[in-house]
Image (cartoon, rainbow, N blue to C red; front, side):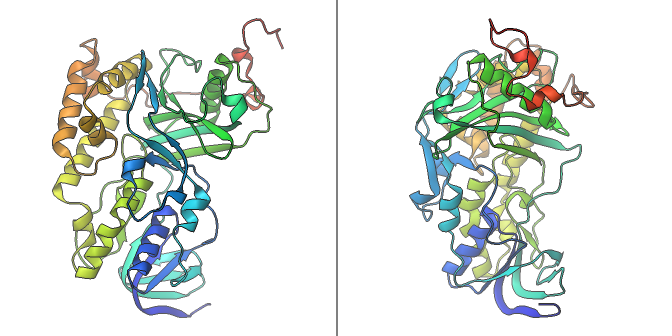
Length: 410
């Protein structure tokens, strides 16, 4: 294809076919637009596990995209909280199949130049379109505020002592991961995936530079051991490490439109992105049809204010100890449902979010910990923390310090 020009009459070019890019190309195509989509491997099934609140999904997305549903997921702080809001894990194949691109021009290639109306691929192919969306995701986080996770996929029968079918742990702060009180905090996320497995994923949010995989794996194994779960040793794993602080783009017509995590839609506190992006696809495309600025449509002042407040939240989360994190989440999960939704998922409910953040800080005990939350003290508590090197024992079923009571020394 070297030197070839494609799509001169195209309405939309989408660069990057992750879930949000594929949804954008699919909905543009379904609405009658002429679409060109570019991705190095457009037929590849996505690797990460994607989850969301059921009510976040757009109405046009069928139920086949849902692999597993949890009616009231649990949160463990000092006690168990049940969230009466259905949660789901998305089916990778189901979501992919729900977003066909049969009438779009799909090009397997890597973009090296992305401009407002032109995309140049590595082999010299040029794509021309009236509007270009860049949905390629984000670069490595470096020292930015980061989400890091290490997940282990465990058969449902083995996972049953902790998570059974129809149940899920959204945030598990119980003292079972082997981390000391003076070490950077992390929590467990665990849900059934609908394919006979459960993912156990130790997660850290908001730390500058994140937490390394060997430390997260050690903590995951410790949690499993605390519940008597012994692994075979050949369980698949997944790793996540991405920035949480990608700013919303500046408004202005006649420019490339970043969308998805590249366009500021990564939730700064939860690390979720896919459902919000899917819900905003039609908003962006309607602006394209009207000839108005999609960025302005996606990011009114209310949504930008919500993003700003959430960034204050992730700054606070990234400097807390484990005990302070537990106290803060204990306070938050006593807030009314609308306030919880304003923090966890609502794109532009600034009034409820402001109230939720104010009341969470105001009810976190003891009082002195509130200074850390707002950044008056310990602003850089975990910056430069040394996690040490990965130990060979981390590759075993259980590390030596995770043996169950009564086990003989190894």
